[in-house]
Image (tube, rainbow, N blue to C red; front, top):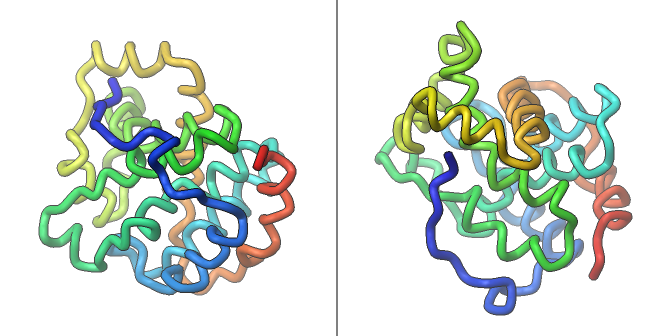
Length: 195
């Protein structure tokens, strides 16, 4: 089941807009993605591109694009994972998105870490296929779910979308793979936004 942590309400969160998101990717997107050999921006765009190529709807494509935006927003350091720090990016980002994006985008973002924990217990071989960095972060993020927690996770609204997001997240770590950049996906974000 999802862990719950205090974070500011939307009223107390800074206003995120499409230009500020583009600016975050421009200013911090070149940082390495959590111990992987690609950048934050490459990872985000690869995940969104994979979802688009699979025929997913705009909400899931945008969720893939923004799922790790919390790392950029809260300036996770490249060494944080190695130092045993979990920045709780999946939770801390939510107040910045809730007031202007639909649940179909926001809820899977908040659940994508727990989706990894869920798949570890429900899908044979899944944990063995995780990248080294993803395996390391798994321990920091609560480890493999037990069977009861997995059943509770699966019963939540948008669990299936969170699992799909997780699969694109796992696959979006290809060094040297050229996909469209952030600007390509922004019209999809704009179409969903209620700014």
